[in-house]
Image 1 (cartoon, rainbow, N blue to C red):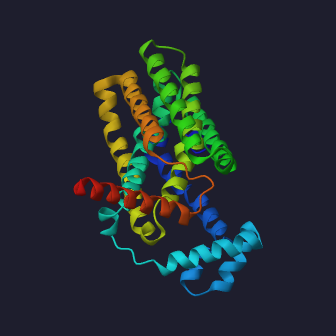
Image 2: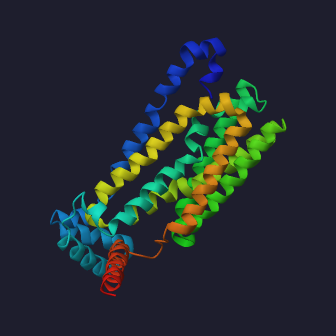
Image 3: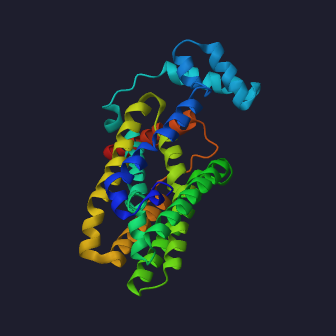
Length: 308
């Protein structure tokens, strides 16, 4: 916003946007500095035969008693770790892969990435001037940051699934309202308000918690491969959203575009309600056992039916 206010529209088109990209160096450097004091994964340390370091971190995180239990569970799971990519498609883990990949893709289908990418234009279409649109964009960014921190504080208290259900329900309502306001040429202030509600709902739900779920539901021995597939699905949907957003604006108008995004949020909500398990309070090893148990039960039922 400060860069935008250094010159007129012509200056921003010619020069200002370059400085805006360069400003991204600052948070990147800050992020790099924050990574330095971060602790290593206890599970990775165990895998590398550095058990004492892993145990020390587990004690710092959850206390000595829990550390003993978790260390044993990690060692047991590592002893069984012989996963391959094909195992994701031929065992009970296939269900986890489908759930995680669909959840990741649907988290972006409601248009959050498109909204943030084109936010000044969205706000100007609601009646805001260029200067006001950039200022309002900053407000939306503040809301995104605040409610992401709120999600981090609530994720273990309220539960992963609960936060996503709450967030996607609000996303559905808020973008339906934005579409209606565009359709009726409603107040630009009201549009800003509902956009802020949408961003807050995404931050407290899919924005933070989706990553928690897809990192927890995959079995430890195939987590790296499965996370790669789910993450690819997430960014592919985000990329396609940015690609087709101008086309949606052209052919559906502002109201139709936001109603489509609202419908996608509703699909996301129903999917989470019906298919996504709650992982709150479960260890990674317990979640893995859930998938293998379901697969064993399914094979048992099929065997009994064949015998009958």
